[in-house]
Length: 212
Image (cartoon, rainbow, N blue to C red; front, side, top):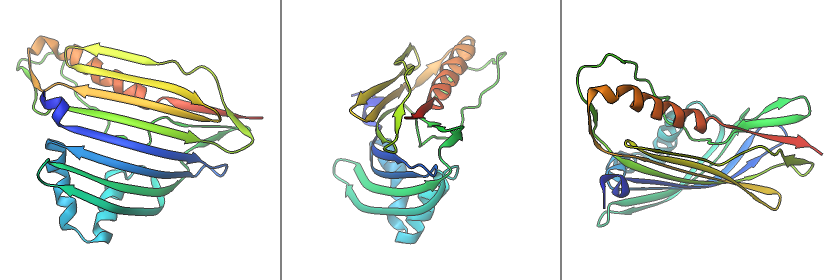
């Protein structure tokens, strides 16, 4: 397997958008390879410290309740997973009688790299794969608006895809992002910046639900 295939973050999320703009989530986080190593410090913390660490990582979410449990640490295979359930206030926004919200609740820091006249090669020291599935439920008297199209990007630096799959009264969002480890020539800097900015922008896609 490649570095990116070994270093995996898999999120399985059931997300309920409430009429008062609260996000109510039950989720399972899974990390392997190098991402497993990065998660190990969590095990040395007390339960309260574990919750605080997760809240700090996703500090842009206005948590009102947090529950982290069922931590499974597989040292032999370098895998760890845990359940993370929470409520966050003001996740969605009202637009008249409609509501909109970001497609991906969990975001890493926005990508910043501005150096179009770079002289040194671009070093991507760590490859990884993200695999997210988010099942959204919405209030009884709302429906998902049309207009969300699947997106797929292929690049020498990796690949990205997002699709939106209606399921009865729910919506399944599937996101996959693979970043390759490697060294790329300095003249590729603009291509690399554009690739990362595109994926970041898609992660901020807004989903609209309209009142019936």
